[in-house]
Image (cartoon, rainbow, N blue to C red; front, side):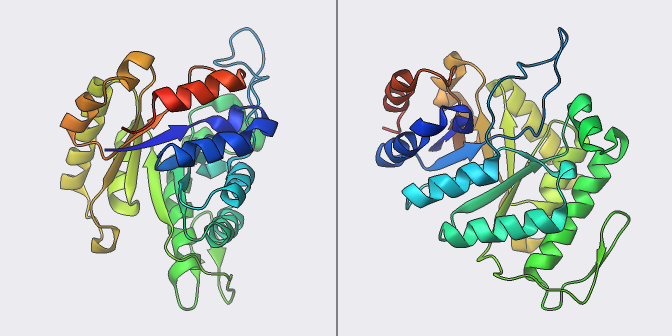
Length: 269
């Protein structure tokens, strides 16, 4: 089972170069960056709004410049908050500058305060996510790109460089997310305990019985991010479920020396 590292776009910016080189040299297969444009403040906020989260695409372009082998992924970009044509261009550009190492992980979002601040209705975020993915795929792959949808319409335009073959990964824990992964993505990105992932796999199996998976997408690749150190140290439990990749997340991002030790402790055997 492959092993990646997640969330180090919240590490001190000046440490990222050496952390990325360390991860690649230690044998990590992938490096994943998370996404929040804004975070709510106040006593009921679900996370600390002062947490530094460098934009994942900017961060991954930086990491691409100092590495040569490690896969670079977003886990996940909140797709309804992004203009799909702009994100398609950014993704194709990152694919080009990284030598085809980019994986675009997307989700519909869950944080109402953030969606409201960006101006995206929570109610239609799933429909937007599906349509945005379809529009982006048209811009990447169609000989003469065009799309006519509820949220996106374009024709008689083109965008280059075309990507060499961006792999799309979908995150989320809902019937809509499972159907999205089956219909539109090369992979699924889940998080939690082995029991949580077992539930995700059951949801994906149910979706696969309900919607058709295009042959071009191949086998659905499963990535799992354990949320606790205990689960991170039990990779065999995820392997038994058929998980293809673990994306391990450090418990803290501020102590750089500790992050380097953590990379060594959790490195692939």
